[in-house]
Image (cartoon, rainbow, N blue to C red; front, side, top):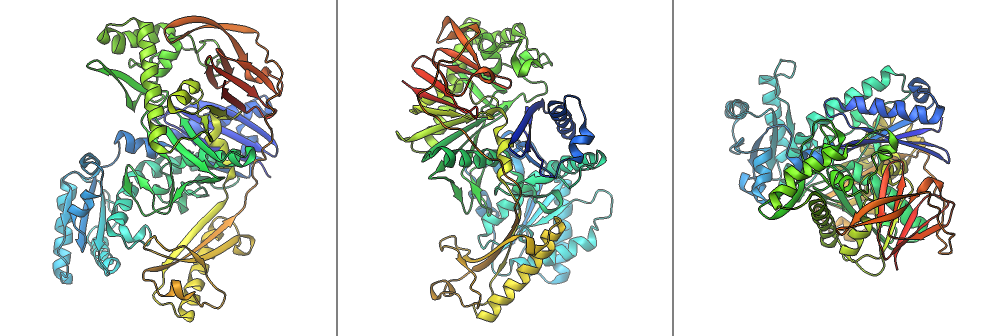
Amino acid sequence: MDRLINIDNGGTLTDICVVDGAQVYRTKTLTTPHDLSRCVLDGLKKASKVIYGDEDLHKLLMTTAHIRYSTTQGTNALIERKGPRLGLIVGGALSLDAVKAAAPDADLFETLVAGRTIALDSGLSDSALEVAAVKATNALTSAGANRIVVAYGGPGRTEEEMRVKRVLLRKFPQHLLGAVPVLYSHEILEDDNDVRRTWTALFNAFLHPPMERFLYNVEHKLRDHKAQNPLLIFRNDGDSARVAKTIAVKTYSSGPRGGMEGAKALARHYGLNHLVTMDVGGTTTDVGEVQDGEVTTHRRGHIAGVEVSIPLCNVESVGVGGSSIIKTSGTAIVVGPQSVGSAPGPACFGLGGKSATITDAFLATGLLDPASYFGGEMRIDPDRARAAITENVARPLGLSVEAAAVAMEQAWVAKIADSLGKFTHITADTTLAAFGGAGPFVVCRVAEAAGISKVLIPGLAAVFSAFGLGFSDIAHAYEAPLTSTAPDAVLACLVGLTERARRGIFAEGFALEACDVTAVVRSNNDVAESVPVPANGVLPAAVAGQKGLVMELSVSHPLAQPRLKGKFTGAGTAARSQATRRIQVGGNWEEVPVYRVEEQKPGASAKGPAVLEEAFFTSRVDAGWQFEINDSGDILLTQV
């Protein structure tokens, strides 16, 4: 079985992409925040109907090799500051002040931890530590902590954390009802930077409960429906692994990383040297870039502006999307970061939402057609959209609904364009890739505001992050500190990591001999380059003389990947339009042609103003721009 299913779970919509050789099937469904497993199964049922003509989930799962899953739930939780109440115990050379100082704003630490912190004295005897650790745990739980992180600093940090762990396991055994989970920073990964490691542990603890709850729920339901293999989680390092072999912090920004893997494939396919991406979902816009065919990645990434111990691609999540709440503050219009999500959703969804969103604005200005929105599967209500705009924007600013909708668009565009300009240096060589359900909406206007003259809308734009998951393999990385650079010690470390890798990849269902294995040595000070582990264990002198060396062994089992096709010739034929639409552009109403993407021949081209529309996205092509659609369905917009 070569069929692979990719699922990208967003705050508003969940995207399904089924890759079967050269054939790609796609669909969308509303995210169900009360039970995230439901939208997954709903989406798979819809996908089975697309493939077979009739709904047959059992047949689809029985003929699928692997299901890969990514989610923006962790990203959204941090942006919206929704999660468990954490407690923090620090000790050794680590101080609370140092941890707090690493955050770009006090609100982040206040949201995650607040005053639930305790510092333990170093060098306590076993009996004194027992008393202090129990008092600290009782005090933190009494203050409302429902998850505790223990982090020590200094050379003996691991041993000190292990001492606390032995005490707490004995005094608060995990089999008791109401036992509070405790996470120890050394269990996340090796990192000599105590503050960075502590923040990584805090983020992991913050993300763990919701990730654990719904991921295992999804996996159990898939098994009930005869899925052939365990659910795979697409991680923020670009690879995938079982739920049971994935830590929560690795799910942060995993959906955006899927989009970046797809963008990398596009950049290489079309020979684009600098591809800047905007993945606009319901809650966030994720901005990234591919430079010279590679995703920009940092050895130590950033989450919510804080440096963490894990590698992360350089993606910035901005609180603006298709479902972001738009309101007024005095005479200004404020966009996000709060979102109505899919429940209740934008006011025009008719599910009880009262807040105004950009989706309501685009409906009020005619860009969206109630009959064709979401492939005709969802009826949206212009009257509800106008009522929400009137109440939240127009009346407070003394504007008409139409003028308010135009002002909402300007504020929405400005926030996205501003994030692009702050993220990277825009040049004449820069191409903007727009995807996600809301990415193509008014991408010409965003590009103009950012100083970009060329835009690429992938044919699978509406499910592009889900599609991008298809470029991942099943992989794990294992690391251990090098206590000595003597050849025997180096080789012994390699043997130990190899055995860990053998057991880990066996749990994924593969033998180590069937996988790609690489081993490198690097410095934990983040300065030195990685070097391969020599067969004789003799490290180069320049490396052997460094402190804080770590060996990392990576093992991966390749999966089938999508094959890209298509090219742009610039000598296309005239695109065909069979309908027009009355839309508002800059305060003026215009009757413009509507081009259905699915109905165009390869090379179809036309100039704006116009509307491009397919089942799951709509794009306004403004005056001064032209489009070309190639044989793969990708769309190139250029300023003329």
